[in-house]
Amino acid sequence: MLRAQIPFELFGGHQRSTVDLMFFKFLKSHSKKETHKDRILFFNRNRASIDYRMTSSEYLPQFGFTEALSYNHEKLNGFAPVLVGQVLSWGVYAKAGVQYAHVQKNFTVFTWMVSELKSAPDIDYFLLLRFTPSISAHWNLFTQLESVNVFPTQTNRNFSFTQRMRLGFQYHSYQVGAGIDLSENGRNAFSTFYNAGIFLRHEF
Image (cartoon, rainbow, N blue to C red):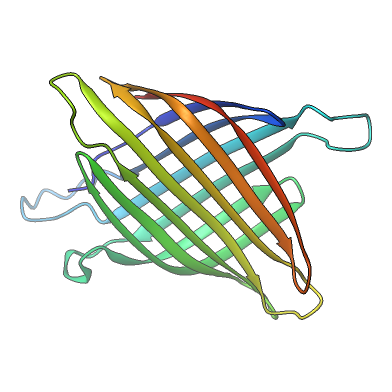
């Protein structure tokens, strides 16, 4: 069964710093039937970054708020239709698509593919993989890969690929280690950016 997770991360990189708060949990049902399963999954993501090169007009802070609701029937084995709303630094977006969620104590797979609700939409693919195997009674290895990708259907718009990797150690509800964020933007020619640094996470 999917358990509630509320990780808060601070990441200090050599080019920018980020703050990230994310959680996903089932909304409680008020049904009195004992056999009824909670099926509405709420996903919330709040992320902001500050570039060290910031001026009054360039490299301004960026933010993103993502809210998603999915209907998870037990017979779909983790797959679910999902509705996504996003407020980003550059606009507001409504999206819909398909989600897959599988969460165990030390392993998480959470992914979706969604499309903007408009003509000639951008297609988003999101993937979160987390693996925290035990090392001792109180310590775990912490590994996480996140992939955020945008595939435009308009030929004059750019592709966007972002990968975030974390590797470190977990002690009870705290994680610390090294990480790197990689991004590419373009279509025929791509611009690249990377930000390497140290992360500190706490899972509520």
